[in-house]
Image 1 (cartoon, helix red, strand yellow):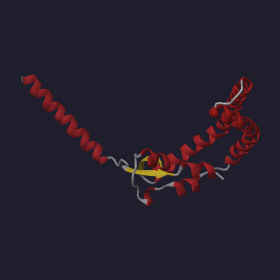
Image 2 (cartoon, one colour; image 1 turned 180 degrees about the vertical axis):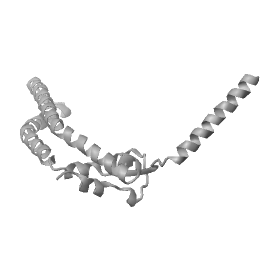
Image 3 (cartoon, rainbow, N blue to C red; image 1 turned 60 degrees about the horizontal axis):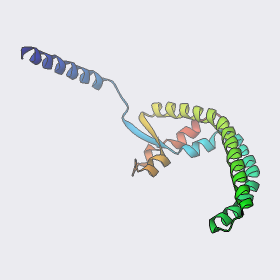
Image 4 (cartoon, rainbow, N blue to C red; image 1 turned 90 degrees about the horizontal axis):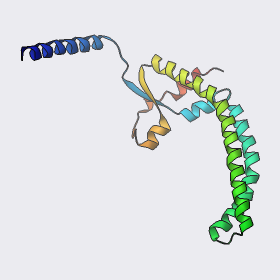
Length: 163
């Protein structure tokens, strides 16, 4: 019993001492948010992503245009065996082409988002934010129902992006 009591006293002393030390340090507690989509679109290299997406649309549109009538016939139940075969081939081609274009776009987008993440971290630290959420993700997930406008660091992040 004496050992347990001694353990409790020592543990309480450590916890109390640790909390007093933690109180002396200035730890940011503010939670902010950023419109990540707007920041990405403001990046100087985002036009390269847009160019890739435009090229992808030009390539994928004819495939989509060919597949739509076949899909309609399949849904209506009056597709021939050839229609079904053509649909499978086109659907596979569309999926593979879409995957290739997504990979190209992501390869260009990755360094942009990595740089933006660093800028967000720097701005957040400068302004005393402990956590920064993506505005749209937080709102659509129900994670955040309300956030005051002064917690939005989007403009500061956009200004801090390299030109």
